[in-house]
Image (cartoon, rainbow over all chains, first blue to last red; front, side, top):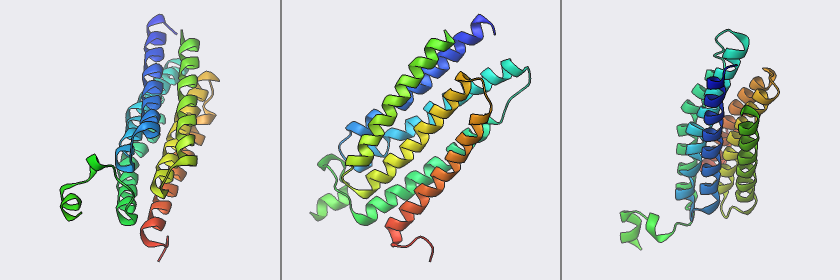
Length: 112
Length: 89
C-alpha cells in the first residue's frame, strides 16, 4: 500500500470518527428533544459515510479487486435515517415532550 | 500512520458510545431514549467497520449490515409503539 493511500485512509477515518463524536456530543449537550434530534444525523451520514469510504478504499487496494459491498450499508443508512427521524419526531409531537422556549413554534407560543 | 489514525478513530467512537449511553440512561423522555438507542446502533456500525479494517477481515461487514437493518426496525417499532400504543394493529 502506497504512502498516498495510507494518508488518504487516515484522513478519512479521522474525519469520520470526528463527526461521529460531534454527533454524540450534540446528543449529550443540546437542551431539548427537537434540537437533540439533529445532532446524530451528522454521525449517520458524514461520519459513517467517511468510514465506509475508507473501508472501500482499503479493501480495494488490499484485494486488487473492486470491493463495493460496503456501499450497501451506506445506501441503507441514507434511505432509512430520514424515515427514523421523521417517526421519532412524530412520536415526540404525539406525546408532547418538553420544549425549551426557543424551539417552540408560533402556534404553540400564541396558544399559551 | 494507518495504525495511529485507527487508534484515534477507536478512541473517538468509544467516547461517542459513552456519551450516547449517558443519554440512553438519563434521557428525560421516551423519544430521547429511542434517539439514543439509534445513535448507539450507528456508532457501533462505525466501530465494527473500523474493527474490520484493523483486523484486515471481511467478516465484520456482515455484522454491520445486520445491525443497520435491525436498528432501523427497532427504531420504527419503538416509535410506532409510542404513536399508537400498539405495534401491529
